[in-house]
Amino acid sequence: MRWPLMDLRVRTPRLELRLPSAHDLEALADLAADGVHDPDVQPFAVAWTDVSPHERALATLRYHWRCWGAWQPDDWTLNLVTVLDGTVVGTQGVSGRRFGVLREVVTGSWLGLAHQRRGIGTEMRAAVLHLAFEGLDARYALSGAHEDNAASLAVSRKLGYADDGIELHEVRGKPVVTRRVRLDRPSWQAHRTVPVEIDGLAPCLPHFGGNLTAA
Image (cartoon, rainbow, N blue to C red):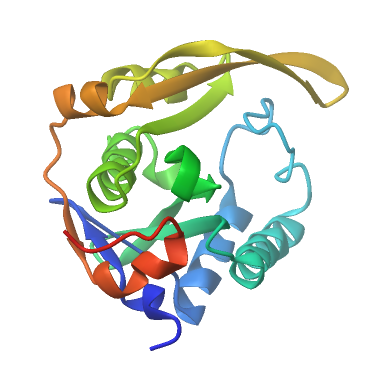
């Protein structure tokens, strides 16, 4: 199979993470249209949600299509939909550049408004961290959030991340401080509390670069 990633599954006790089918992607676009955050705040460095519901849905579709088309073993972004009880509730991404050398990934995610504050964000991040560290032999995982995004930073602390400096971004015409966080392998191992299973990874490994092989 030339594109085995469609069969990749990452599962926790409640969730399944997978590359979206056409139906999944439509559901995710609908979720984006319904809202991702309080409109009075902007948690993203790129303010892609500051548009109409229809444009948010289209932006979601275009982003996933663009990442699929741009995939290279040396520069990839894996955007998985998060499924709870058969319903798409959000998306969890993980990306790597020069991963074969650096063994470093960056994660990002969002949940539909109706599915927040239920521990799903922590669980789906734990799932993709297991994929990165256990499945792909990563050394580090990076993330970040605006300094007023207490929920995202709390998830990072719970999973063992340490502070890794700050960045300044212009959001809605104003400077915003983003706090970077970094997770290394020993800290990940010390904070593993969510059981995770991965299916279908072995045939996908060449697409992640770095001469990866199945354990």
